[in-house]
Amino acid sequence: MGDGSAALAAAHRYWSRLEDGMNLIAAAAIFVLMFIGVFQIVGRTAFDTAIYGYIDYMEQASALFAFLGIAYAQRTGAHIRMDLLLRGVSKRFLWAMELFAVLVALVIVTVLVETTFENFLRAYQLGDSTIDIKLKTWPTKLLVPFVLAVLWLRLVLQAADYARLVAHPEAPPIAVPVIETIEVQARHEIEEALGREENRGREENRGREEKRS
Image (cartoon, rainbow, N blue to C red; front, top):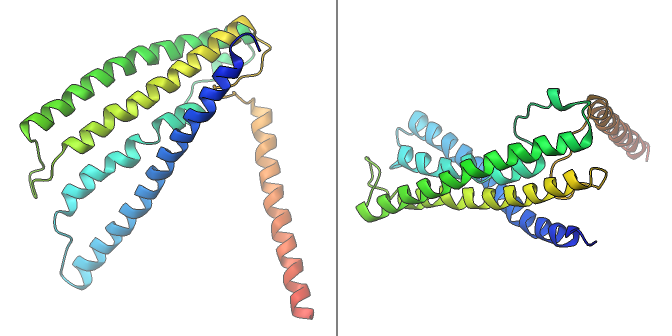
């Protein structure tokens, strides 16, 4: 593949592993924070006790699930999109509009990486901390530019792929989400529902056979 597709596919594959790992950490953080929240409520209600510094810990830990999944969402197209106006247009025009949107996002994220890193430096140099238990805030503030840097490189990969698709509209997408038509989405939902029904039927049949035996 002389258009750089092989290198792009390799970069996309390896970078996806980092994004998947970050998204998994975000999901685990949600589970842990929900568990801690339940423990806090039960403790205060039933035992008249509370986790020391609970609010400060929750404020800092919320950055995990708020930011770690951003690059994953961008890769899979899980964020809110306005696809209605782009349905039915030619592929080259579609890829060109997607490229324009990604380039705009790339400029914005570039600015955000710099400003959030400066915010981290100020917090680190000044020893910024939370009000209640004096928890250092710089680790959370460092997380933000790191996540944005991961998102920045994902946008670079998508920009490169969209540029390739503008030049070759019929080529298969590599590092960008594929927009499904309403018909395709409906078919996938039907197949998923039918798959659940089939699995439920198998389980019921298996249960009857076990009872007979």
